Length: 218
Image (cartoon, rainbow, N blue to C red):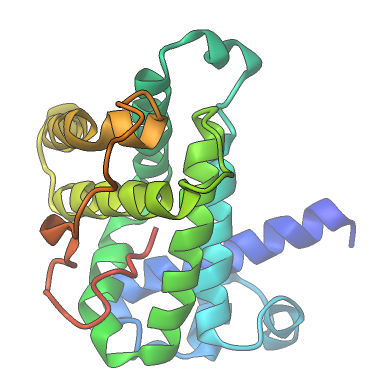
């Protein structure tokens, strides 16, 4: 099996696990059922993942790659705010085929600490990729504050996206546009030099308000 085939198989397993969660639930589905859903043997699954939380991490990495797949050199000519808008919406586009599974997993996440921890760490990684994908600086003394800001921005929009049935995700885009108006200058670094880091973001709680509010899937 080539490296590409191996990667494709890992991605297929990760997507199958999230999609299966839509009907079976995340805690209710077993690795055997995930393997069956993906059309692979348990042995093949075990070569990619050792447990279900690892499968979630694999799904997050896949979404990161799909989010970044449309990034081109020419995007650097766009305004930073526009690039950030596009990269966040690209992430939701990548998640959309799996939204039912994502929603079900989010409901169960407060009862699964291992998966919650994996997704919290994945969110930090994804925040870096969102900044990098938008062509924004991902280093320097203000980086921790910018990471907190982009994470809070994403989480508040994610809550809307989970249940957005509007045509063309118009509610999600409107929320993202509003949040960029509130935090965009700080994240992009175009605000005043003595600007203060944003305070706690009360909009970033998960839909169920559970303990794992800062660990969305996707």
